[in-house]
Image 1 (cartoon, rainbow, N blue to C red):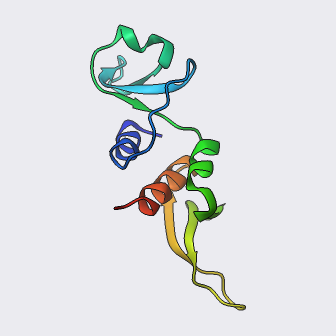
Image 2: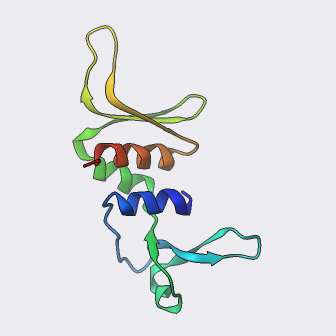
Image 3: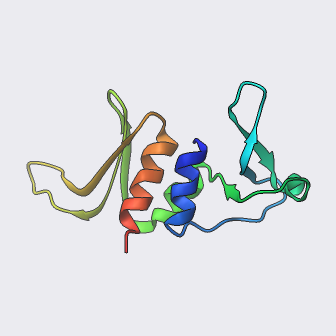
Length: 116
């Protein structure tokens, strides 16, 4: 998951955990290649800037609760959920979100499920 998507989750209300070994992005913190760096929670006090929690796939699925339906890979990863709209012949869910990784697809589903 990249910084931009983690920030979207935070802005949508995803809980920012404070576990000792949780991973975070720190706004503006880059490595020599110019990529966003990931920092352990226990090291966060050493950095200035907004901290953004990076949830793992298990946590993303669990926080979708009963609204999570399935996750599969075709050309991209697809996460479905929300209300069931299908019938006996065709499975269809209210939301279908895609991503390059399973985490990205489920994060996008969580954001869609939690729009206010």
